[in-house]
Amino acid sequence: MPHQPVIDGFKFAESGEALRGVWPIADFTRLPDVLHDASGELEYAVSGQRDARGRAALRVELRGVLRLRCQRCLELLEFPLAVDTLLTLARRQSEVDADPLDSDFERVVGGKDMAVRDLLEEELVLGVPVAPRHLRCTAGRPGSDEGGSPFEKLRGLLGDASPDGRKH
Ligand SMILES: [Zn+2]
Image (tube, rainbow, N blue to C red; front, side, top):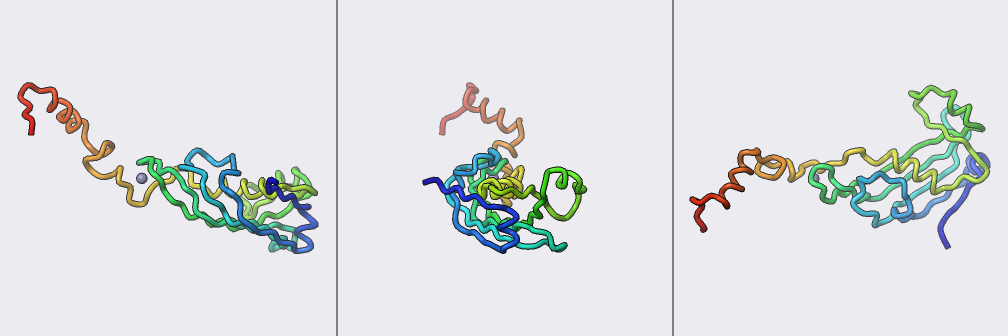
């Protein structure tokens, strides 16, 4: 049976309910294509809370290791994900739209059947770097494809074809 829990947003928040578990990364289809592969799982927790102004809110937490592709060398980059967001519930979309974009809290419309998967996916997509790169990426070393000068590459090509070329 697919694991697709649904929560009643305001009821969940006001009664301080909590839900936690693990979710396969492959289930999140909206992840950007910086993903190397979708193996593994994320630990998640959704809990009903109140925000600083006492409004009903959902705290969304996600932890795990995402297998991303370094955008420089295109090799695997293991990215430790740690998301912890408080989403203040709104009664309707117009309430969300009325909030200034730079407000320091996030809002989401609270419904009677909010798919937990969608809540998690939204935060997951926000938590993934747009252009992940290794801290010390080997593609940046001199002599590699990206670092080598065009002249060096040309010399390498000519070396094989040149009549003076000697075999070692
Ligand atoms: Zn790299």
